[in-house]
Length: 189
Length: 246
Image (cartoon, rainbow over all chains, first blue to last red):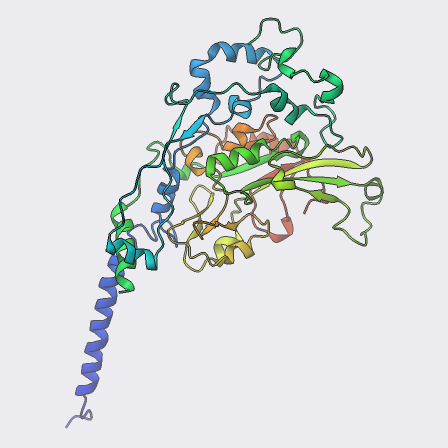
């Protein structure tokens, strides 16, 4: 005689539990991204996706590859340590956004639960394709005063002028050559 | 009906795997930080504009910004006396994050200085500890990142960051912050803010690189971090930082 009577319902319950656990494992296998937990409690692939974004500022090394003559001039002057894109900016332009096809019913249903990320149109860089983005010449009347306008807040050793008194309205580039701004820099670019 | 689309989206990332963006980059060889020399900053706003351009930061939000401090003569001669209103002295301004520079300061009294701010990429960061879904994390090379596809936009991390360096992106509705230009440093470039800084006030630092000048700089200068009492392991190192900086 066994002490266990009418134990069928326990086995049925245990069976259901095992089945539910197997379903959980199967669903988990498909739902949890493969790279989750690769490095820690996060999706390892996220780092690759973030790192894969294109850079907009090309870096001064890219500029110096073609503009070595400017680099030579710059290295002799007080702006030797100022990178090209500090003044010229990132020479990029957004391409016109490509027309998107109307989303399918399935995509629209997905959008109800997980709204899609905004799609960014690609851009082109002067460093990659010099003809695609024509760099405008920076206006020295605007550019130089950003750094060199006199202010009691700036470090005392930093060269500063009161533009109205210093140049009487003339653009800085009339007298100074931005790549080598010293007044003795004759013929500098 | 609710699970299916979510599963489909998850499946997309399962299939994607880890993209190989920089084949020669080895995460375990780096431990990134930033050196900020307050004595060199002129408040031109180049770094703020560069960051917004590089990272498509929406107007009115900032991954990095610059603050201008003004300590009065009284404050400087009585540094240990707590003023009735410490929010007034020192006077701190940051118009539009300092993006277009600062108004000319004509008051010669006291002392002024500019303090660039950004994510401190803490090695024991409060923001990653509070994320309920593992959307924000510290990468093996020491950069605090946000996985936008996992983030729920709950903004716990925004509240947890003691430095105010996070915001919820107004369009994407997910947490956003400085990535230390992860897409650049993994390709051998420096960050956009460092690239655009005309005075070298910002320097990207690799603490695992024995040849990085940061090591010599840390030895020979009085370098501090913001809010050291919070023990966040901040890796934004400030040179010549005034004690009044919050």
